[in-house]
Length: 349
Image (cartoon, rainbow, N blue to C red; front, side):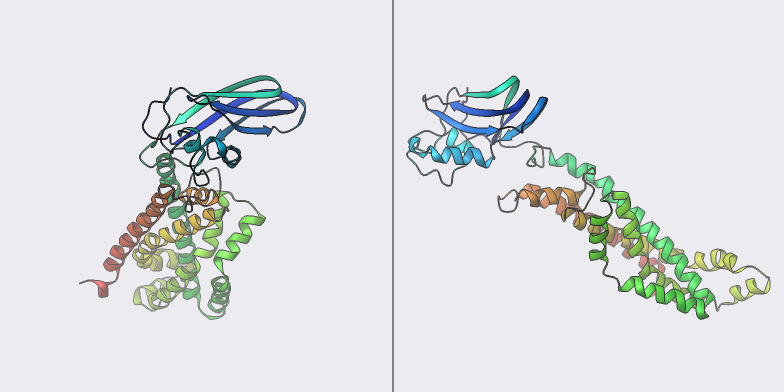
């Protein structure tokens, strides 16, 4: 019995069946006013052997809406702009809610067994709503937070450490070694990162761990240039000359005397590099190149775009993940700026 003053948010039919051949699924509803509406007639995938099959049918199914429009003579009002649930639960003479008992009938011609469950949805579920598959978006946002932080922090740390060692070694050695390493750095720096990441994701795998590796490959070059310039200045200081006179090896001088001088800059660079990695991953996931097994914010935005959330006005599917990306990025930018002001005395007020 439907006794509410507003239309349902949606309805959902879960069914499971065993069949062989090509059975036909029929769904109809008998309304409180005695009118029977045919909702759907659809053939299931053909199978030569006995197969267990399950599926979900939502009220947003376009076939249901088209079938109801073909029965427009039942209604005295225009139905072209109405949704399926508004036509099913509306009075025949106006677009108001029709209260009473609704009987949904599900039959499957040619099937040996059919189990079905009809679910009637309300207006709101959860603090952030649901997506097309009726998954709680708040859960996706919460699960996406550690994934985004993991990707951002791992990529930032890996890129900064790689760039730091590469740049310091290049600047300390100088000469032909420095020239060769910097030309290699320039080649990587000149490569368009996003197109290459798209190509690599398409041709190899969309694993999140592989994506982290790709982001590290393109993330260290800027750090290497700055580290090299700092190493060129530090290697001329007296404590470095003293270490050379004492007979210390180059690698010991680099890791014991030069790199510790650059660690404050490295910490600030890590904080600033995190949002870049997070937004890049979100962009790749939005394009459908992310790992579908991880509930990232970019994956949520990709699902929203795939189901036309913007055109349908489903703002709660788009705005929250975008806000999460923006807030996380701004937080690490502020942290990086604060650390940079501590490292660089010229930035202090």
